[in-house]
Image (cartoon, helix red, strand yellow):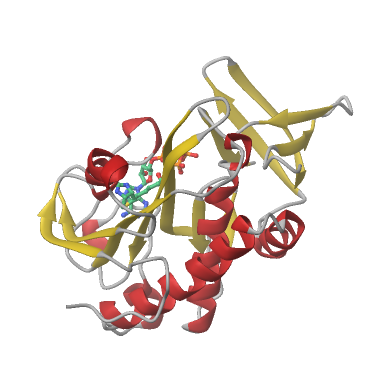
Length: 247
Ligand code: ATP
Ligand code: BTN
């Protein structure tokens, strides 16, 4: 039994030693479950990021997904990724680790990815059925079990941390920022996001339609990245099938 002090997130916890993917499991049960049900596993066999890209999920990480059913217009759902990012960064901060947000869904420490966030939902044009907030955080994971561009808390701190302690800090922070999202205090959310994000930097945007370079200045009220191209045009890049590289 995992004892947590949050009111919504984790009021029901479904734990697996091993699973395909907590996000996939969450999607399978989401319609029948109450908001806040959280799925967590020691190991994922088929953990994934965007576009079904493989997410390494060996023992020693937090691989979790929480089912959320906010009573908001579906256009706001994209902001759940921002809730996840700010929550993770603040949880790491509470553990003494300074992390940065790489738009849209990566958390970096010393330039290496320590955490990925994946929000996947079911909604129509006017109604939200659910949105799953998936978080993968490398804690006591050995370097050789991760891709070369990744890092873990163990690598940064030089010690292993009890997963449960990190989990409790994390869901406390996520619940706090989810409350702000539900109250539609979007400015508070975006301002905090900005203060932790890597902005004012030259970036390369890659998508199936092609590539372009520019300077990433900010995000707009819908979470789109505002990029100034060399000819001075402001392009808005929407979270979706795009990748960002720092140039
Ligand atoms: P992109 O790199 O194209 O901007 P992304 O960073 O959001 O996209 P995804 O497309 O969602 O990443 O795919 C996950 C990527 O994360 C994989 O390509 C892999 O390089 C990396 N990765 C996989 N497992 C881990 C892990 N446990 N920790 C850190 N990074 C990982
Ligand atoms: C990213 O690519 O940056 C997002 C990775 C998200 C990984 C988490 S781990 C828990 C949940 N289950 C999954 O299969 N993916 C997410």
